[in-house]
Image (cartoon, rainbow, N blue to C red):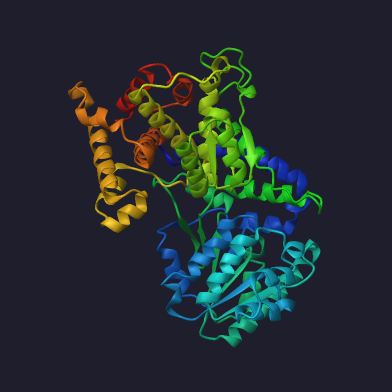
Length: 553
């Protein structure tokens, strides 16, 4: 087993490469980042006592009176996490009240009107001057408000002016603490959940003020995705750390990576930097290119190499075109114009709807409707894989000859394997996929299995049987070189069943690849060689896939 330091280094390497450029851009555009008030927060939380199970967090919250939840405003997961908490059965055992920094307390009458159903979403958004006075993403915040209207007894605005002047930030803390004390008095038996910017939750900021005002109240601070705690937790031996106990009354949950946080903030900076008349979508090109660049540096690739041997030839010229948050109508026209069949168009549109983005290999383009770190990292990896192979779909400016069914099957599986691996090195929080997860799927009832796989029950059962047999065949392949009939028949799967089988088989191999990397069994040179493998040649994809599986089993 690798040591804590080695595990931390291997899990963090690709992210740190990608983070460097994002942090440079943020520092250049955010002059307040170095202020003492913000440093107080970053210096306060550097280590933790022990790892928590995810279920421990709602239980601790349920036993508190006031819970301060740290909000990284630009990260939708921050608001969505609290929306999830409000609906959690452990939390709902008693009345819940929500307090938010986003809304000024002067506008309490507006949120009350919306809470009673007297005004709609659009009027609420306009009257609280959300874009003018806050400016972050409305959708996740409104999801939080909606969850609170359904499950809480009240919503309260806690903030006051001026927001832009850090010299007055202490006055805002005192004002918010006074408002929370009022709420506590008005709802003495309720659990008061407060969402406030994370820097306000340094021990000597709001927590200290609230203890002075409410010394008898049971207080808990719930941080989210604090960088030093995240990097420290990266050295734990478990696949994924979801929460840690920082101290008796402070814990931290992880629902995003540092790279995900700062890429979302960069998108906010991009939007804020536009003129009032520029209503175009934020430019996601730099985000995609930065993810690719992080992988390039992680793999030790020379993007300027003139030869395609141990390095891809002129990788710098093979970067994909990025369509940022364009409409589905544009995607349909694009796919139709470029010769995609009707079934291929439907599959691609379904992929974009489910994941928010897709890599269009024949076009060497990434289509991004919504930035989701896990899937954007996967698409960045797919584009890099194609670029490392010299963009085989563009050889001599002609479409390549179609692969034989078996070659096409294993080429697709291998591409999924690298995509999953790349997404995990860029986004280690992505859940692992192992054979035991497939076994759990097989135990589901008919309705749940169809929902989990998006397949009919007979197709889902057949797909899972095939995956189990294929994985067993891989483990015992050295004992018998005979190719079973079921293996060749599976290459004839069609439609969504084909997509599901190739993706799941590839993801399983990609997870094995990531585990081998963490264990130190594969170095950057070996990983780079996989990206350079020319799997489009007859028989190559199958050979490369089984050679890889023999190294991983």
